[in-house]
Image (cartoon, rainbow, N blue to C red):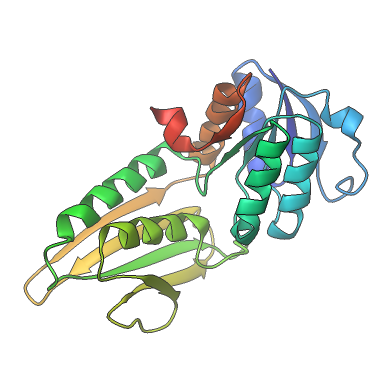
Length: 237
């Protein structure tokens, strides 16, 4: 499989190593030096594109892949206010898009665990839910896309919660997310349910970026020759 890496930072380099180790070829690397001038012809050399850039570039990159009829895997976060527009464009163009806030296999299992725990906690109003996420200082968005995915899943299952807030005290109807930034932390996400008598918590700790990169390559392998809108849930079925 021929892959275009749209975004060639630390994640792009991890993806490159894993893709090559699995027998794939990188035919295009887009970074800050060529982000504004890579051509559709270069993009069309690829069977699939993997987009890990920055929020302000993501939508343009995704749309360029859709217009070039190249299936695109999107790992960039903090652009979801335009998600419906992008999906409509993809559907209208008979394109292919797979988005995930996190491509780690472990995190996607953690998503399912989080949803199940929230479902179990629904009758027990004495437990107050909160979250914490820790990332490296270069993480551009806070809270992370992964934390937002976790919080939204809790909101779907707990009728008493209708909103999340970040780094501020939460009202009874809100979920507090503490977003911390420190050195050399690839990503830690915790969900806590606290009552007067005990606490229940679940946590995912990433040791490095390899899990995210492997998941992105597996998603690209899954997406090849498909049309439509997909998520990591589809990949892991």
